[in-house]
Amino acid sequence: MSQKLALLRKAVLTLASVVAAGAISAPAQAAYPDKPVRVVVGFSAGGTTDVIARIMAKELTEAFGQSFVVENKPGAGSNIGAEYVARATPDGYTLYFVAVTSAINQTLYPKLNFDLVKDFTPIALAAKVPNVLVVNPQVPVKSVKELVDYAKAHPGKLAFASSGSGTSIHMAGELFKLEAGIDVLHVPYKGSAPALTDLIGGQVQFMFDNMPSSWPHVQAGKLRALAVTTKERSPTAPDLPTMAESGFPKFDVSSWFGLIGPAKLPPDVVKALNAAMVKALDKPEVKDAFDKLGAVPGKTTPQEFGQFIQSEVTQWGTVVKASGARVD
Image 1 (cartoon, one colour):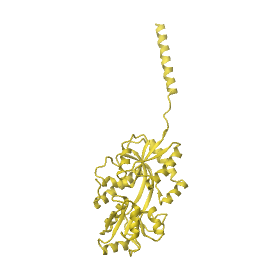
Image 2 (tube, one colour; image 1 turned 30 degrees about the vertical axis):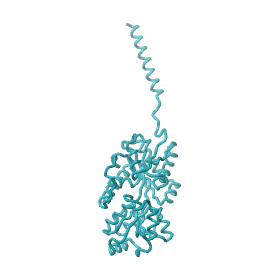
Image 3 (tube, helix red, strand yellow; image 1 turned 60 degrees about the vertical axis):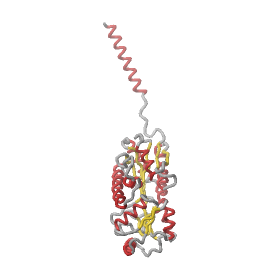
Image 4 (cartoon, helix red, strand yellow; image 1 turned 180 degrees about the vertical axis):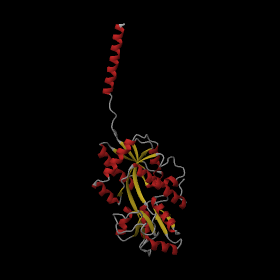
């Protein structure tokens, strides 16, 4: 019996030593990220969304010592890229650089295969780019109030341009039309450049455009700026009043950009990415790059960004429905 007990004891000790050795030699879980991270952009290369995404991807690469690679997946008003990320594994290695367009698309497209609020995890707002209300100098107005009065005195005679139906530029015009109670015509173009060309030429009378593309024309005297669309004045044009200051207190419109991931992204991954984004937005070189784009750093917590996205979906849903805009 004693021999059997001795053998049993030896077997138990051997098993214990094997388990202990295995525990010691087991590799620790790798810190995130331990391989390249894909940052999907729903637009072609070269646009504002792409440019800001690449600025932030560079900063994240430096912060984590691992490549954050921008991948453009354009199409369907950015919906192709968004759906791709919504269906990706929520491990932090496939992220989406979202823009205001996605908030508009939630109502503009009645048959989307994803929900911007339910199917994504908010990480951080990167930047806001103000829109600016510009008019052709031949229009005899020098303020938003004068433009409203002029439009009411000439119902159906004024036209506003946009970079395309359903864009933030179009929706800003529809919001203005709704809030001011004016009868004006929307003329969509295939991009901001041809819209500005016709605005300068007098074929249309006003436009809500992204500041980076229209401001050089304002400085050259080819367009007249009346107001910026954000609640705060723009550092690019500190003397230009806001729409809120011009009689529209609820008017707060901007093109915005931020980082989100698939739903159920690990909290520690979200926390790490948010911290890196916020830290990067304080760097002088990032601020300088944003200044050249007319962009204002965002800096939010994930929760604040999530609330902001929800508010944008709600606001633009109201405007889209009121305008009758729709893309099947």
